[in-house]
Length: 355
Image (cartoon, rainbow, N blue to C red):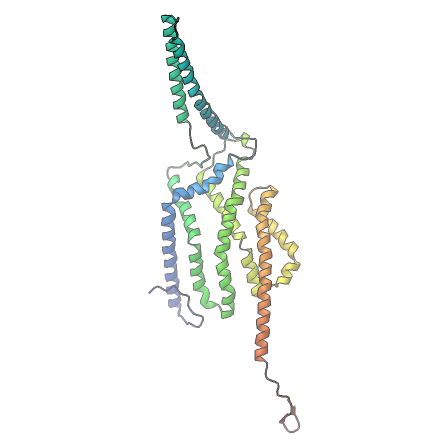
């Protein structure tokens, strides 16, 4: 029967049993990934639409320079508005001409000429209406595909990335459950809270990257020197870039896990971290500068700010844990101290004297 619960520390398994447990957990991981992938592939349209949103918004950046494709999209919008406004004006003018033709005193020749002009205006109005109806409604940026199989392969890949993110907590639990027998009870008390923090912090980092960092990065890069390029974005490159940015920010949000791990294992204390806070903030600034693809300082500060907050919260939690650990150790020492009998050792007659 498949095993889902962790093996106890006191359990003794042979190599074959360990391999069998590894196989079982790998099978469960594959099943979970297939189920998550099925859901993500079923909703691939919504996932692609969500990932493409920063790219669609990039053409509305604050920069004054626009590429030829952006100018063409802007022209389509303006032309559509012109068609929409011109059609009723032409129809109204044709009706006015028909009223003039019906007025008394107009000769038959003039009436025929006016009727022709009114008919021409009506045809022009209909042409304007048709042109307005044909103006592209979707004026946002979309990534392009160049190969025959690229739409299918790219959709398949994006669904795989989304499925991996969706089933990440279950995969981490299976990894933790497999290595748990090697941990002592003390090490298990350290590892368990950290394993619970990892998926939550990673998802928080991905959300921060998607809503804050990625839109600014795409907007900056797509509007950089745009008047000198016809900017086309290949789908697989854009999705690779997006996944890389989100994964890096999700990994950077693991700072509390690393801090709590080194402090609870006794490698470094919270006081030492506080004392060297300046060096840590400098390191965070370097990591934020490397992790963000845009050179502007505002984006770097946006990524850096939550990392500094997470660092300070981690130091605070480390202090709380250290205080509790010292209190527990002091209580244990008090329990282990032998009772005082009020006597002494008489070395002369090897007797114990009790007062």
